Amino acid sequence: MSSASSFNTRWSLVQAAKGDTPQARAALAELCEIYYRPIEAQMHRWLGNAEDAREITQAFFARILQGNRLSGAAEGSGRFRSYLFAAAHHFMASHKRAQKAEKRGQAVTESAEDRLLELVDEEQHPPDMEFDRAWACALLNKGLETLEGELRNSGKSKAWEVLKPWLAGTASHGDTAQAATSLGVSETAIRVQLSRLRQRLRTILEQQIADTLAPGADFQAEVRHLMAIWN
Image 1 (cartoon, helix red, strand yellow):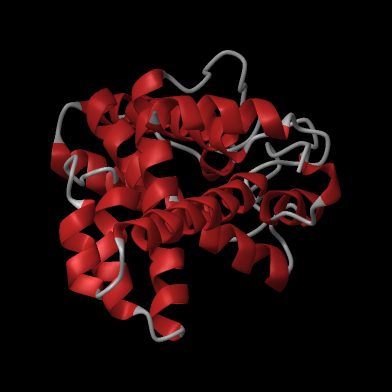
Image 2: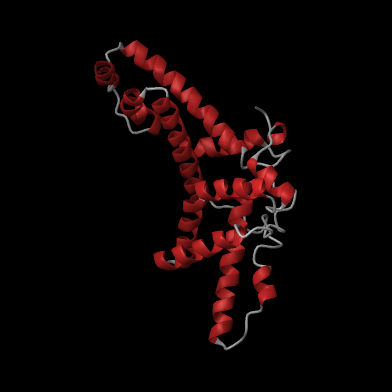
């Protein structure tokens, strides 16, 4: 898996239709659901108030999900992560300008509202490390959720409950003996299972990352960047 060019990714589907087909809207809704929390956390950092952050985040995603609002999602928007961060910054700044205008008694035109998500400058407002850390966390949580579903659907719920701490990075050194006892297998078998599950989790995460990239985007660079945050 060397690039996003070989995938019909969610983000490429959204871009191609500018979010204005049922398939594109469904893909965009799935992406927004996964990465809602990183945007809310970033709004909190920008605004300094949790309630304001919740309200503007809801308004931001409502605006995006209305359909045909992605004129700023040009073909060059290779990463959904970069686009969403820049769009959120643009929306937040426009919201603040609108508030100031209202305080001065000036009208905010509908045409100005319609442009809130247009002409997004991703280079001027690239994601910062705190946002990327929250993004990586959301990605990992979704990956763990997907892996959990696979194991439970295959009748391995107990194995998931016992082995999840290693996959989530919360297990203590030496706990493999206790895990082996819980599952009635050897420690060697536990290590083999963990190796397989880690590989499966990585595959899931790579597919999720690919889904946020447009064709031609540097898939390996995005994987390295996000994996470095986890490690």
